[in-house]
Length: 428
Ligand code: SDX
Image (cartoon, rainbow, N blue to C red; front, side, top):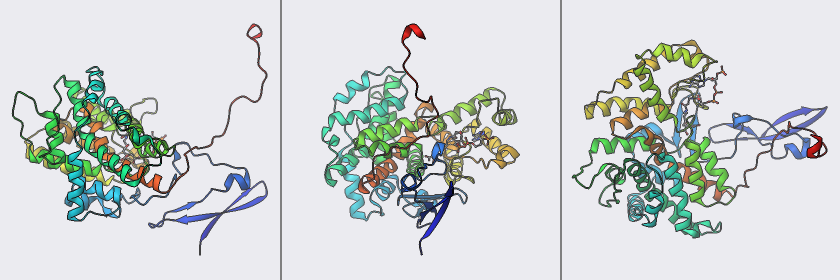
């Protein structure tokens, strides 16, 4: 028997269907709310509002659960690879050996980018933030593949765009870094796996031989898996709403990169390290910064802490924290900010302000410490987040398109001036 929800307004009763998902989440279907009652809802930041039905990622903020297409994030981080997880998110099932080989071969075949992209890259000053360079180069793909602008492309044509995105994103990411360093760019090496190829494009120099450290490549692969999707977060919602206007997948992903850039979202991993460095430079007094974070008159927030959905430990943070210890030990890296991070975490977890607000470390709190140990510079951390999130954005864009969802266009409650007559300049 289907459930319903009743609303009483100005003496009139209204009833709306309640839909329940496969994990027993329930939502009031308000599609007929305005037509029947004249009312709309208001929910800044969409804290209580579902934008869509999705079969890709399930997370339970209270229980600290995260699953991609039903598979536990803990299992995928331990047993899978980033390309296999990308296939799972985009096509819905874990690939067979043949499907996986075909998928990774196609991606390898498309890693090279048009030489004219280098002219765009060279137009950026070396102080350009790599996220701006990355989103620009991804959007530039609309110029090199204008067929992507056609909203009525076949599934095969859309799939080629998907392959091109996954294949070329590491190249663009590494080139954004080389632009910043003033180094010549490296071309992809198709003999290498996905993460090793990225690391070589990032760190190889013409004057020296470069061998990829398998420990680094493996740690990077795990980090990309952990960032691969996270249901309707800010950047994913951006990708879906831009795609809902039938903008090309390249334009939609470029918009997602820009949304991720903000320090409250993916940019937090860069802000966490900058915060930890500042605490270290200021004598390492974790409690002083905890007090700043609690002071309403101080704009300082404990970056890497808190989450819109997780009101328990972010399961990714738990995995990354353990990986940080493992990777730093294997690489023989001793990073004092890791100790400050752990001290800050312990202090916050035992502080009433954080307990009352259910603020726990999120995915960004420890990830930067690993990126740093892998030799990745701080302002490339959010680029790494984008590299990981790409298959999730693609899967969500594809689902939105396949479900034939309408163009996203929220309503508002107007609070401005009522009607008034124009006043000529000499009378103002
Ligand atoms: C990501 O949505 C996703 O899934 C995102 C993500 C993904 O995978 O896509 O998980 C990735 O973006 C992780 C979050 C990274 N951002 C940060 O670490 C920045 C610091 N965190 C916050 O700014 C904040 O916690 C948010 C933005 C993450 C969540 O903000 P909400 O849900 O809008 O919560 P809020 O700002 O309303 O905070 C509720 C209360 C407030 O206090 P009161 O007004 O109730 O007294 O908690 C306080 C906030 O001031 N608070 C913090 C805090 N986070 C929230 N206080 C100090 N330090 C913090 N970090």
